[in-house]
Image (cartoon, rainbow over the protein chains, first blue to last red):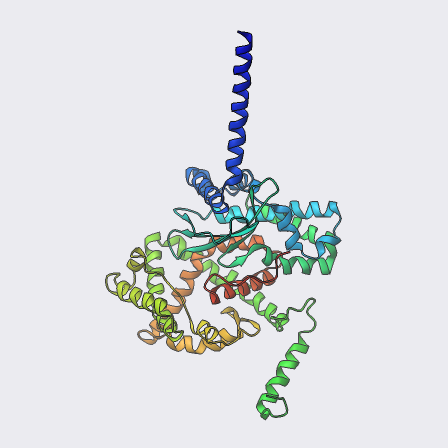
Length: 211
Length: 239
Protein backbone atom coordinates (compact mmCIF):
# COMPACT_ATOMS: atom_id res chain seq x y z
CA UNK A 1 0.00 0.00 0.00
CA UNK A 2 2.72 2.37 1.04
CA UNK A 3 4.81 1.44 -1.95
CA UNK A 4 2.01 2.16 -4.35
CA UNK A 5 1.65 5.60 -2.81
CA UNK A 6 5.38 6.27 -3.09
CA UNK A 7 5.40 5.15 -6.67
CA UNK A 8 2.51 7.41 -7.46
CA UNK A 9 4.30 10.23 -5.76
CA UNK A 10 7.43 9.61 -7.77
CA UNK A 11 5.48 9.37 -11.00
CA UNK A 12 3.64 12.52 -10.04
CA UNK A 13 6.83 14.42 -9.41
CA UNK A 14 8.49 13.21 -12.55
CA UNK A 15 5.43 14.17 -14.54
CA UNK A 16 5.55 17.59 -12.95
CA UNK A 17 9.26 17.87 -13.66
CA UNK A 18 8.66 16.66 -17.19
CA UNK A 19 5.95 19.24 -17.65
CA UNK A 20 8.28 21.91 -16.34
CA UNK A 21 11.03 20.82 -18.72
CA UNK A 22 8.52 20.70 -21.52
CA UNK A 23 7.43 24.26 -20.86
CA UNK A 24 11.00 25.42 -20.68
CA UNK A 25 11.82 23.61 -23.88
CA UNK A 26 8.94 25.37 -25.54
CA UNK A 27 10.25 28.77 -24.46
CA UNK A 28 13.64 27.84 -25.85
CA UNK A 29 12.14 26.68 -29.09
CA UNK A 30 10.18 29.87 -29.61
CA UNK A 31 11.26 31.41 -32.87
CA UNK A 32 12.71 34.94 -32.66
CA UNK A 33 9.93 36.49 -34.72
CA UNK A 34 7.32 34.76 -32.55
CA UNK A 35 9.05 36.15 -29.46
CA UNK A 36 8.98 39.70 -30.84
CA UNK A 37 5.35 39.30 -31.87
CA UNK A 38 4.35 37.99 -28.43
CA UNK A 39 6.26 40.76 -26.65
CA UNK A 40 4.82 43.51 -28.86
CA UNK A 41 1.26 42.30 -28.43
CA UNK A 42 1.70 42.00 -24.66
CA UNK A 43 3.06 45.52 -24.33
CA UNK A 44 0.56 47.12 -26.73
CA UNK A 45 -2.35 45.38 -24.98
CA UNK A 46 -1.13 46.54 -21.56
CA UNK A 47 -0.91 50.11 -22.85
CA UNK A 48 -4.34 50.03 -24.43
CA UNK A 49 -5.85 48.53 -21.27
CA UNK A 50 -4.38 51.18 -18.95
CA UNK A 51 -6.08 54.54 -18.90
CA UNK A 52 -3.37 56.37 -16.92
CA UNK A 53 -0.80 55.28 -19.52
CA UNK A 54 -2.92 56.61 -22.33
CA UNK A 55 -3.18 59.88 -20.44
CA UNK A 56 0.58 60.17 -20.68
CA UNK A 57 1.88 58.74 -17.39
CA UNK A 58 5.45 58.07 -18.55
CA UNK A 59 6.56 56.72 -15.19
CA UNK A 60 3.97 53.99 -15.41
CA UNK A 61 5.14 52.99 -18.88
CA UNK A 62 8.70 52.87 -17.55
CA UNK A 63 7.62 50.26 -15.00
CA UNK A 64 5.94 48.30 -17.77
CA UNK A 65 9.04 48.42 -19.97
CA UNK A 66 11.29 47.43 -17.06
CA UNK A 67 9.13 44.44 -16.20
CA UNK A 68 8.09 43.18 -19.59
CA UNK A 69 10.68 44.28 -22.13
CA UNK A 70 14.02 44.55 -20.37
CA UNK A 71 14.23 40.82 -19.47
CA UNK A 72 14.37 40.21 -23.23
CA UNK A 73 17.18 42.67 -23.91
CA UNK A 74 20.92 42.07 -23.76
CA UNK A 75 21.70 45.48 -22.40
CA UNK A 76 25.35 44.75 -21.71
CA UNK A 77 25.93 44.18 -25.40
CA UNK A 78 23.93 47.27 -26.39
CA UNK A 79 25.95 49.49 -24.08
CA UNK A 80 29.28 47.98 -25.07
CA UNK A 81 28.67 48.51 -28.78
CA UNK A 82 27.32 52.03 -28.30
CA UNK A 83 30.37 53.01 -26.25
CA UNK A 84 32.64 51.38 -28.84
CA UNK A 85 36.42 51.24 -28.35
CA UNK A 86 36.10 53.21 -25.09
CA UNK A 87 34.35 50.23 -23.50
CA UNK A 88 37.58 48.30 -23.05
CA UNK A 89 39.29 51.29 -21.43
CA UNK A 90 36.54 51.46 -18.82
CA UNK A 91 36.92 49.74 -15.46
CA UNK A 92 34.24 47.19 -14.46
CA UNK A 93 32.78 49.80 -12.09
CA UNK A 94 32.60 52.37 -14.91
CA UNK A 95 31.05 49.80 -17.23
CA UNK A 96 28.38 49.13 -14.64
CA UNK A 97 27.62 52.85 -14.27
CA UNK A 98 27.52 53.32 -18.05
CA UNK A 99 25.06 50.48 -18.36
CA UNK A 100 22.85 51.83 -15.57
CA UNK A 101 22.67 55.37 -16.94
CA UNK A 102 22.24 54.32 -20.57
CA UNK A 103 19.45 51.99 -19.53
CA UNK A 104 17.58 54.78 -17.74
CA UNK A 105 17.97 56.98 -20.82
CA UNK A 106 16.78 54.37 -23.31
CA UNK A 107 13.93 53.06 -21.21
CA UNK A 108 12.61 56.60 -20.80
CA UNK A 109 12.91 57.29 -24.54
CA UNK A 110 11.24 54.01 -25.39
CA UNK A 111 8.50 54.65 -22.86
CA UNK A 112 7.97 58.11 -24.34
CA UNK A 113 7.59 56.56 -27.78
CA UNK A 114 5.15 53.95 -26.46
CA UNK A 115 3.13 56.76 -24.90
CA UNK A 116 2.24 57.86 -28.46
CA UNK A 117 0.63 54.53 -29.22
CA UNK A 118 -3.12 54.59 -29.68
CA UNK A 119 -4.77 52.22 -32.12
CA UNK A 120 -1.64 50.74 -33.68
CA UNK A 121 -1.01 47.10 -34.42
CA UNK A 122 2.27 45.29 -35.05
CA UNK A 123 2.78 43.28 -38.19
CA UNK A 124 5.79 40.95 -38.16
CA UNK A 125 7.31 40.40 -41.58
CA UNK A 126 8.37 36.92 -42.72
CA UNK A 127 11.67 35.92 -41.15
CA UNK A 128 14.60 35.35 -43.45
CA UNK A 129 17.01 33.24 -41.42
CA UNK A 130 18.43 29.73 -41.30
CA UNK A 131 17.34 27.44 -38.47
CA UNK A 132 20.77 27.47 -36.82
CA UNK A 133 21.37 31.24 -37.03
CA UNK A 134 22.48 32.73 -33.71
CA UNK A 135 21.74 36.32 -34.74
CA UNK A 136 18.74 37.29 -36.80
CA UNK A 137 16.94 40.39 -38.00
CA UNK A 138 13.25 40.55 -37.14
CA UNK A 139 11.42 43.10 -39.23
CA UNK A 140 8.11 44.54 -38.12
CA UNK A 141 5.81 47.33 -39.11
CA UNK A 142 3.63 49.46 -36.86
CA UNK A 143 0.35 50.04 -38.61
CA UNK A 144 -2.15 52.62 -37.53
CA UNK A 145 -3.22 55.98 -38.82
CA UNK A 146 -0.71 57.51 -41.19
CA UNK A 147 2.13 55.81 -43.00
CA UNK A 148 3.34 52.50 -41.54
CA UNK A 149 6.40 52.82 -39.31
CA UNK A 150 9.33 50.48 -39.83
CA UNK A 151 10.49 48.88 -36.56
CA UNK A 152 13.21 46.23 -36.76
CA UNK A 153 15.05 44.27 -34.08
CA UNK A 154 18.37 42.45 -34.02
CA UNK A 155 18.11 39.45 -31.75
CA UNK A 156 20.69 36.91 -30.61
CA UNK A 157 20.38 33.45 -29.16
CA UNK A 158 21.51 33.61 -25.52
CA UNK A 159 23.33 30.79 -23.72
CA UNK A 160 20.04 29.57 -22.18
CA UNK A 161 18.48 29.30 -25.63
CA UNK A 162 16.17 32.32 -25.30
CA UNK A 163 16.29 35.23 -27.76
CA UNK A 164 17.54 38.61 -26.63
CA UNK A 165 17.25 41.94 -28.41
CA UNK A 166 20.58 43.76 -28.84
CA UNK A 167 19.67 46.58 -31.23
CA UNK A 168 16.55 48.15 -32.66
CA UNK A 169 15.74 50.32 -35.61
CA UNK A 170 13.02 52.93 -35.97
CA UNK A 171 12.38 54.09 -39.54
CA UNK A 172 15.82 52.92 -40.55
CA UNK A 173 17.66 54.51 -37.63
CA UNK A 174 19.60 51.96 -35.56
CA UNK A 175 19.61 52.98 -31.93
CA UNK A 176 23.10 51.77 -30.99
CA UNK A 177 24.69 53.33 -34.08
CA UNK A 178 23.03 56.64 -33.34
CA UNK A 179 24.71 56.87 -29.95
CA UNK A 180 28.19 55.89 -31.13
CA UNK A 181 29.32 59.33 -32.31
CA UNK A 182 27.95 61.15 -29.28
CA UNK A 183 29.52 58.69 -26.85
CA UNK A 184 32.88 58.83 -28.63
CA UNK A 185 32.74 62.65 -28.53
CA UNK A 186 32.18 62.65 -24.78
CA UNK A 187 34.88 60.07 -24.09
CA UNK A 188 37.44 61.87 -26.26
CA UNK A 189 36.70 65.20 -24.62
CA UNK A 190 36.12 64.22 -21.01
CA UNK A 191 36.95 60.55 -20.57
CA UNK A 192 34.69 57.69 -19.52
CA UNK A 193 33.71 59.48 -16.31
CA UNK A 194 32.74 62.50 -18.40
CA UNK A 195 30.38 60.35 -20.44
CA UNK A 196 28.86 58.85 -17.28
CA UNK A 197 28.36 62.36 -15.89
CA UNK A 198 26.72 63.60 -19.11
CA UNK A 199 24.36 60.63 -19.19
CA UNK A 200 23.45 61.12 -15.53
CA UNK A 201 22.84 64.84 -16.14
CA UNK A 202 20.61 64.08 -19.14
CA UNK A 203 18.63 61.57 -17.09
CA UNK A 204 18.18 64.03 -14.25
CA UNK A 205 16.81 66.75 -16.50
CA UNK A 206 14.53 64.22 -18.24
CA UNK A 207 13.17 63.09 -14.87
CA UNK A 208 12.53 66.70 -13.89
CA UNK A 209 10.74 67.38 -17.17
CA UNK A 210 8.28 64.51 -16.75
CA UNK A 211 7.24 65.45 -13.22
CA UNK B 1 39.99 64.57 -65.02
CA UNK B 2 43.23 65.92 -63.60
CA UNK B 3 43.33 69.24 -61.79
CA UNK B 4 45.61 70.74 -64.46
CA UNK B 5 43.07 70.11 -67.23
CA UNK B 6 40.20 71.64 -65.27
CA UNK B 7 38.73 74.95 -66.36
CA UNK B 8 39.38 78.04 -64.28
CA UNK B 9 36.02 78.11 -62.54
CA UNK B 10 36.40 74.48 -61.50
CA UNK B 11 39.80 75.26 -60.01
CA UNK B 12 38.12 78.07 -58.06
CA UNK B 13 35.47 75.68 -56.79
CA UNK B 14 38.15 73.25 -55.63
CA UNK B 15 39.98 76.13 -53.95
CA UNK B 16 36.81 77.31 -52.21
CA UNK B 17 36.06 73.81 -50.97
CA UNK B 18 39.60 73.44 -49.64
CA UNK B 19 39.34 76.81 -47.87
CA UNK B 20 36.04 75.84 -46.28
CA UNK B 21 37.55 72.52 -45.19
CA UNK B 22 40.46 74.35 -43.61
CA UNK B 23 38.14 76.81 -41.91
CA UNK B 24 36.36 73.95 -40.27
CA UNK B 25 39.43 72.13 -39.05
CA UNK B 26 38.78 73.59 -35.61
CA UNK B 27 35.98 71.08 -34.90
CA UNK B 28 37.10 68.67 -32.17
CA UNK B 29 36.29 65.43 -33.95
CA UNK B 30 35.77 66.00 -37.64
CA UNK B 31 33.32 63.73 -39.39
CA UNK B 32 34.26 62.86 -42.95
CA UNK B 33 30.73 63.44 -44.18
CA UNK B 34 30.30 66.70 -42.30
CA UNK B 35 33.16 68.98 -43.39
CA UNK B 36 31.03 72.07 -42.74
CA UNK B 37 30.35 71.12 -39.13
CA UNK B 38 31.13 74.43 -37.46
CA UNK B 39 28.95 76.31 -39.97
CA UNK B 40 26.26 73.65 -39.70
CA UNK B 41 26.22 73.83 -35.92
CA UNK B 42 25.65 77.57 -36.06
CA UNK B 43 22.72 77.18 -38.45
CA UNK B 44 21.38 74.28 -36.38
CA UNK B 45 21.33 76.56 -33.32
CA UNK B 46 19.60 79.28 -35.33
CA UNK B 47 16.94 76.87 -36.62
CA UNK B 48 16.38 75.56 -33.12
CA UNK B 49 15.87 79.09 -31.83
CA UNK B 50 13.40 79.88 -34.64
CA UNK B 51 11.54 76.66 -33.89
CA UNK B 52 11.31 77.40 -30.18
CA UNK B 53 10.30 81.03 -30.71
CA UNK B 54 7.88 80.72 -33.62
CA UNK B 55 7.17 77.41 -35.32
CA UNK B 56 6.66 75.21 -32.27
CA UNK B 57 4.37 77.66 -30.44
CA UNK B 58 2.27 78.22 -33.57
CA UNK B 59 2.03 74.46 -34.19
CA UNK B 60 1.06 73.92 -30.55
CA UNK B 61 -1.66 76.54 -30.85
CA UNK B 62 -2.87 75.06 -34.13
CA UNK B 63 -3.11 71.65 -32.52
CA UNK B 64 -4.93 73.05 -29.51
CA UNK B 65 -7.67 74.88 -31.44
CA UNK B 66 -8.31 72.38 -34.25
CA UNK B 67 -10.21 69.11 -33.82
CA UNK B 68 -8.48 65.87 -34.81
CA UNK B 69 -10.69 65.28 -37.85
CA UNK B 70 -9.83 68.69 -39.27
CA UNK B 71 -6.07 68.20 -38.88
CA UNK B 72 -6.40 64.77 -40.42
CA UNK B 73 -8.15 66.28 -43.43
CA UNK B 74 -5.52 69.00 -43.75
CA UNK B 75 -2.72 66.43 -43.51
CA UNK B 76 -4.39 64.22 -46.12
CA UNK B 77 -4.81 67.21 -48.43
CA UNK B 78 -1.08 68.00 -48.31
CA UNK B 79 -0.14 64.33 -48.64
CA UNK B 80 -2.21 64.17 -51.80
CA UNK B 81 -0.37 67.17 -53.24
CA UNK B 82 2.91 65.50 -52.30
CA UNK B 83 1.82 62.27 -53.98
CA UNK B 84 1.57 64.15 -57.29
CA UNK B 85 5.26 65.03 -57.15
CA UNK B 86 6.11 61.54 -55.84
CA UNK B 87 4.40 60.08 -58.92
CA UNK B 88 6.57 62.23 -61.21
CA UNK B 89 9.75 61.24 -59.39
CA UNK B 90 8.91 57.56 -59.17
CA UNK B 91 8.33 57.79 -62.91
CA UNK B 92 11.70 59.49 -63.45
CA UNK B 93 13.31 56.70 -61.42
CA UNK B 94 11.67 54.13 -63.66
CA UNK B 95 9.83 52.45 -60.79
CA UNK B 96 6.67 51.00 -62.29
CA UNK B 97 4.86 49.81 -59.18
CA UNK B 98 5.62 52.94 -57.16
CA UNK B 99 4.66 55.14 -60.12
CA UNK B 100 1.32 53.45 -60.69
CA UNK B 101 0.56 53.36 -56.94
CA UNK B 102 1.22 57.10 -56.69
CA UNK B 103 -0.86 57.92 -59.76
CA UNK B 104 -3.63 55.66 -58.49
CA UNK B 105 -3.56 57.37 -55.10
CA UNK B 106 -3.83 60.84 -56.59
CA UNK B 107 -6.67 59.80 -58.91
CA UNK B 108 -8.68 58.13 -56.14
CA UNK B 109 -8.03 60.71 -53.45
CA UNK B 110 -8.53 63.78 -55.64
CA UNK B 111 -11.95 62.54 -56.76
CA UNK B 112 -13.64 60.19 -54.29
CA UNK B 113 -11.45 61.64 -51.54
CA UNK B 114 -12.77 65.17 -52.23
CA UNK B 115 -9.59 66.93 -53.37
CA UNK B 116 -7.44 64.76 -51.12
CA UNK B 117 -9.18 65.54 -47.82
CA UNK B 118 -10.06 61.88 -47.39
CA UNK B 119 -7.34 59.27 -47.86
CA UNK B 120 -9.52 56.69 -49.56
CA UNK B 121 -6.50 55.17 -51.32
CA UNK B 122 -4.92 54.00 -48.05
CA UNK B 123 -8.20 52.35 -47.11
CA UNK B 124 -7.92 50.53 -50.44
CA UNK B 125 -4.36 49.50 -49.47
CA UNK B 126 -2.69 51.53 -52.21
CA UNK B 127 0.68 52.24 -50.61
CA UNK B 128 2.34 55.64 -50.42
CA UNK B 129 5.83 55.94 -51.89
CA UNK B 130 7.09 59.45 -51.28
CA UNK B 131 9.89 60.61 -53.54
CA UNK B 132 11.43 63.99 -54.29
CA UNK B 133 14.02 65.03 -56.83
CA UNK B 134 16.92 64.60 -54.39
CA UNK B 135 16.01 60.93 -54.13
CA UNK B 136 15.68 60.71 -57.90
CA UNK B 137 19.21 62.10 -58.27
CA UNK B 138 20.36 59.47 -55.76
CA UNK B 139 18.73 56.64 -57.66
CA UNK B 140 20.36 57.98 -60.82
CA UNK B 141 23.70 57.48 -59.07
CA UNK B 142 24.55 60.97 -57.81
CA UNK B 143 26.46 60.56 -54.49
CA UNK B 144 24.96 62.31 -51.44
CA UNK B 145 27.90 64.64 -50.85
CA UNK B 146 28.52 66.51 -47.61
CA UNK B 147 25.92 67.24 -44.96
CA UNK B 148 24.49 70.75 -44.96
CA UNK B 149 22.13 72.36 -42.46
CA UNK B 150 20.18 75.03 -44.29
CA UNK B 151 18.63 77.98 -42.51
CA UNK B 152 14.91 77.20 -41.91
CA UNK B 153 14.92 74.14 -44.20
CA UNK B 154 17.12 72.08 -41.90
CA UNK B 155 19.33 69.07 -42.63
CA UNK B 156 20.10 68.14 -46.22
CA UNK B 157 22.86 66.53 -48.19
CA UNK B 158 24.38 68.54 -50.98
CA UNK B 159 22.60 66.30 -53.50
CA UNK B 160 19.27 67.24 -51.98
CA UNK B 161 20.17 70.89 -51.99
CA UNK B 162 20.81 70.46 -55.71
CA UNK B 163 17.37 68.86 -56.06
CA UNK B 164 15.56 71.65 -54.24
CA UNK B 165 15.09 74.10 -57.14
CA UNK B 166 13.47 71.33 -59.19
CA UNK B 167 11.27 70.38 -56.23
CA UNK B 168 10.23 74.00 -55.86
CA UNK B 169 9.24 74.16 -59.52
CA UNK B 170 7.50 70.82 -59.46
CA UNK B 171 5.73 70.55 -56.11
CA UNK B 172 2.07 71.53 -56.39
CA UNK B 173 2.10 73.03 -52.90
CA UNK B 174 4.39 75.83 -54.16
CA UNK B 175 2.62 76.37 -57.46
CA UNK B 176 -1.11 76.40 -56.93
CA UNK B 177 -3.57 79.24 -57.21
CA UNK B 178 -2.91 82.96 -56.88
CA UNK B 179 0.21 84.45 -55.26
CA UNK B 180 -1.47 84.61 -51.84
CA UNK B 181 -2.32 80.91 -51.93
CA UNK B 182 1.21 80.15 -53.01
CA UNK B 183 2.48 81.90 -49.90
CA UNK B 184 -0.12 80.56 -47.51
CA UNK B 185 -0.19 76.89 -48.51
CA UNK B 186 3.48 76.10 -47.76
CA UNK B 187 3.17 77.87 -44.39
CA UNK B 188 0.11 75.85 -43.38
CA UNK B 189 1.92 72.75 -44.63
CA UNK B 190 4.90 73.42 -42.35
CA UNK B 191 2.71 74.15 -39.33
CA UNK B 192 0.65 71.02 -39.96
CA UNK B 193 3.79 68.86 -40.24
CA UNK B 194 5.30 70.38 -37.13
CA UNK B 195 2.07 69.75 -35.21
CA UNK B 196 2.30 66.08 -36.13
CA UNK B 197 5.78 65.79 -34.65
CA UNK B 198 5.28 67.79 -31.45
CA UNK B 199 5.22 64.72 -29.20
CA UNK B 200 7.87 62.78 -31.09
CA UNK B 201 10.11 65.86 -31.02
CA UNK B 202 9.92 66.04 -27.25
CA UNK B 203 10.76 62.35 -26.91
CA UNK B 204 13.83 62.76 -29.11
CA UNK B 205 14.98 65.90 -27.32
CA UNK B 206 15.28 63.84 -24.16
CA UNK B 207 17.20 61.07 -25.90
CA UNK B 208 20.20 63.00 -27.18
CA UNK B 209 23.42 64.01 -25.44
CA UNK B 210 24.48 66.19 -28.35
CA UNK B 211 21.31 67.03 -30.34
CA UNK B 212 23.37 68.17 -33.34
CA UNK B 213 25.23 64.92 -33.97
CA UNK B 214 22.25 62.85 -32.87
CA UNK B 215 20.13 64.52 -35.53
CA UNK B 216 22.88 64.31 -38.14
CA UNK B 217 23.61 60.62 -37.62
CA UNK B 218 19.91 59.81 -37.59
CA UNK B 219 19.59 61.74 -40.85
CA UNK B 220 22.40 59.75 -42.51
CA UNK B 221 20.87 56.46 -41.41
CA UNK B 222 17.39 57.48 -42.50
CA UNK B 223 18.56 58.65 -45.95
CA UNK B 224 20.45 55.42 -46.46
CA UNK B 225 17.37 53.48 -45.43
CA UNK B 226 15.18 55.35 -47.93
CA UNK B 227 17.77 54.92 -50.67
CA UNK B 228 17.69 51.14 -50.15
CA UNK B 229 13.89 50.88 -49.68
CA UNK B 230 14.09 50.09 -45.98
CA UNK B 231 16.59 47.29 -46.44
CA UNK B 232 20.14 48.69 -46.65
CA UNK B 233 23.08 46.30 -46.80
CA UNK B 234 24.82 45.85 -43.45
CA UNK B 235 27.75 48.01 -42.55
CA UNK B 236 30.69 46.65 -40.59
CA UNK B 237 29.41 48.27 -37.43
CA UNK B 238 28.45 45.34 -35.25
CA UNK B 239 31.13 44.18 -32.81
